[in-house]
Length: 332
Image 1 (cartoon, rainbow, N blue to C red):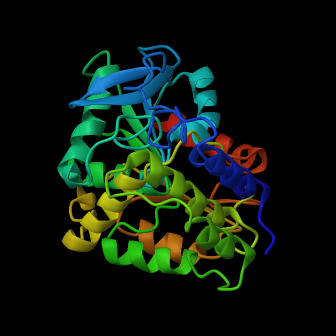
Image 2: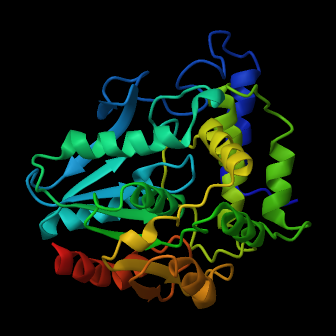
């Protein structure tokens, strides 16, 4: 089996930590296995919102229209979306934050996650950065972030001035599960999946053992960017740390409650920009039309020469940014 460089280095690092060559090192101590979170490292930029310390930063004039960037996952972080800083040079206050339990934000027990909490967190971020009641608020969400943006708009259809949605899996849980099934159809003998299953034998953790589970989640996520994955990604996107517990909690919550985030979308009459990519074999025009049809007014846009990571690498970004900027300026 050909093990990728990333996984080989990860295995060697884990081996050093567990070998006992330095007794003071433990995979359970902050910073040894994965990067520290904001509550463990006070030098990281953060805000306190809704009882959680969130890794966050903002760019641009504070009085300009707000553009809130919502990363994917659940459980990823905003590092792979930092190209969006470019909007700050175009008259927008661009806000990034790692969602609760994700990236470098504070971790919480599996049992604490609720849909209401994710609404309250996003509203708290908006209120933290908003300088006046007349300041417009736009959402830009990728993947899970686009689903979160839709869930928020469905709950508060009068609060958002516009939205850019990049390949949300679905806007009902049934559609989400169907899309996920298509993206996970790897070759059972494929190199990437074999590498992940091989590595998972060496490190295990309890349900709320965040550092260990985040590390294992990272190994699993590496397979989604391999050459045999159907999402068409260009490569491994930049990131700090994954959030395994928040991922598991929201997936389990979705399976239990079967949410539908389209029930009030008919009240949101502002045109939504809906992006899909040329190289994501699991998505395509038909799925984009199907998912986006829940909104009354939609501008469909295909990012050429890119996959699901269309906002992360230069080709996809260059092919998408002008259209996104034009959309936002029309509503500004």
